[in-house]
Image (cartoon, rainbow, N blue to C red):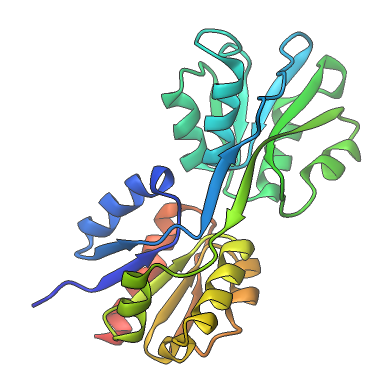
Length: 248
């Protein structure tokens, strides 16, 4: 019996752990990065003195921050508060000594910051991309924190689906699509329509990391549209398993 094939729309660097998890539940993965990540050049200067913590909201931000800091151990002693375990794991792998993960979204990260930091003990540096979802900076500034958002990378949407991805989608070879951000979902919807295979969604499950992602993805006529119980990899895999079980 062939394994169900799942479309993974994350960049390759972020998809490695996910592909291993998919294999563990008997799924194959077809990788289709829909956002191209490019570092800001020249890299921005990263303050260290007087910084209470780095705030990380994506694995892309983790890698970009480390690249801008330069070789370890520079800056690796600054505490890190990450939005979820994926970005936290990326920071640990890059040599940061004190890393703690929140519950997977900006609201949880803001709560973690409020619990672990003190507005009077220094500013916070948010390693961000050129496009951000929500406003972590404003939320924390309302709590009295000084927050410096530094743009380290750009995420450029793909202009077209790769031919093999369009063929798999239009040919009914896929069982589900994993979507991780509103921007990724918007890009998938646009490119599927452009490729003339948007109607293929009627046979697919869409598994979304958050309700915000699902709100954008619902522009296509999915067989089933589900949202992970929490915006983390484990609950996302659980949601996928439920979709695949229903599809038999």
